[in-house]
Length: 85
Image (cartoon, rainbow, N blue to C red):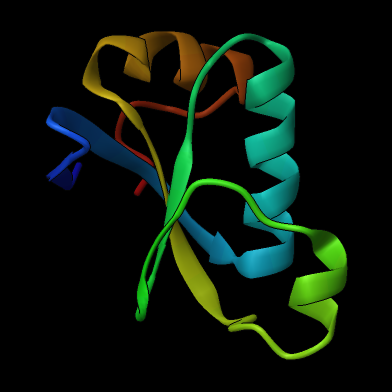
């Protein structure tokens, strides 16, 4: 898994997904109390408005990151294997 420093902490990429799917997963994680951010080719995104995405923001594949200490909880909640990238 890829890790990166963001906002002074280590975050881990749990999956690369099309933007719309990643946004949905990000909201699901938020509902479980698990912070997440997206990394697009243009930078980090903490929160997005679906209308912004539909009107022209980057919609390709993005990386979904969670704090390193929440990787296990996020992977379990999303039913992902630890080997999934």
